[in-house]
Length: 240
Ligand code: F6R
Image (cartoon, rainbow, N blue to C red):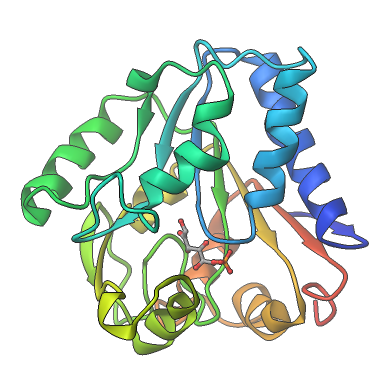
């Protein structure tokens, strides 16, 4: 595992964008696994800036996102599809047909089958970007008794619902379920790029990478991946 300690959020975002940009330059047909949440926003800004400066061409790049809330349409401001459009896809020359996010309003069971088919249709993901939940989740693979392999429906834990409440006007509007890529699918990525920022993530980062590998801390499974790059700011990595 490689660890990059950045001074702050800005430094973390720049380093993460360097790693993704290098992949896009080396392999213009690459498959990028993408995440949402507040942590990767700065990285997406950096990628858009580099695209505007003519450094990057996304015309043959393919993307697959980790997850989506059940019940939110693509046009809903808090849907992950909307997030991706606003933070990245609308600002670069990616072909919309090459961007994949689970659909929140299709029948969830059918959507899991469809999304598994989409993922199986690709060669492996070249770089999978991950954030980290305070409870150790990756994608929306919540702590549980076993690792779930493929795309599945998740009942979000109360701590995740609480963490997401900052984005919704009322508690009743917060989705309670999500569709997420499974652990096997994440682990099959050639490279994992995990981003962490802020002292609020320091304890869970320590547990995930220095504690036992257990589905109780889903991110701990990354200890078994041969090519993990962890990019964090000083505060998030302070206990590692
Ligand atoms: C988002 C995702 C989640 C987030 C995690 C951290 O697509 O899969 O696992 O990465 O909840 O979220 P932030 O970055 O908001 O702390």
